Length: 85
Image (cartoon, rainbow, N blue to C red):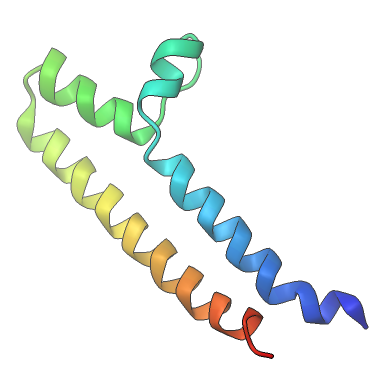
């Protein structure tokens, strides 16, 4: 009985963590090897600054923005049900 009641909070928390993780930039740069794991934000930076390929960087930025909008929409949608008293 408790699990169905916590579903909205679990989904909202998972979406918020996913939303924060798609925009990470400094953490992979400072803590890890970028040859093994790359975030989308780091790939956008590398295409724009290092390779001077602004078209690909702009397209990836639009994809990143769309992902952020989708995650924000679903996070707000599911978090409303969790705050009902």
